Structure formats: C-alpha cells, structure tokens
Image (spheres, helix red, strand yellow):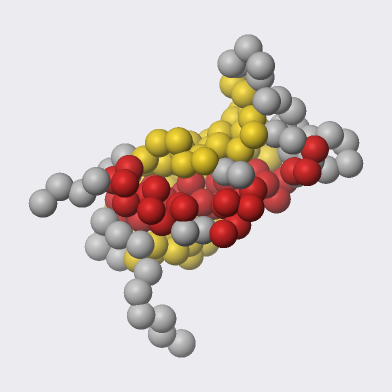
Length: 141
C-alpha cells in the first residue's frame, strides 16, 4: 500500500491550531521531506522589523517533525532540536525546508534550512536546524 504523503501531512497540518493561527502553509511533503512557509507581516516581527526568532524556530521545528514523521511512516514528535540563526529575516515570506537524513525504526535525524524570500524571489539563508524526531505513540513516564 502506497502512502499519500501530501494528503497525510496536510490532514495533520490542518489539525494544528498554532499553525493555523500563524497563517502557515505546508507547501510540500514527500516520503522524507517537508516545506512550510509563512508570509511576513508586522504581527510576526520583532522591534527591529525582522521576522521574530520564535517564528523561525516554529518553522524549523515543524518542518523537521513533518520530514521525520513522514520518513517514519506516521505521526511523530520532536525529541530535540537545535537552531542557528545566521542573519536577520527580512523579505516577503519565510520558508523552511527539511529532510530526514538518517532513519531507524524509532527515530529520524533531520536537517532544516530556513530562508527568507524577497519580492523578486531571491532566497537568503536565515537559519539552520537539526533535530531528532520520534514516533508518536503511548507516552511512558
């Protein structure tokens, strides 16, 4: 049976209240990858007019989790991730692209690049992240 990666991912994405609140869009999903974008607007900026680091972190975390979850074949959660901000995000929208680089039965190690995109369509790297994604399931203490 072949998994409809895009359909599965969209159904989970649309069930995320925070993603809907931010106006985020899941723009691509594959067997081990995902792309999420948010349009830049004043409500998501910090005092200098840059897209807030928390928004960039959300994009990286969610893209990592979708890439890992798709690679693992189901629902997933972030076990940990690290992000490096490399320059201020100023542009029309921000896009995060993640892919699973190593997948085992229980976890996927994923990498993500976050770009700001100008009116002309030029992309500039603003953050990089790496995370470990695990299958969602029965929670043990």
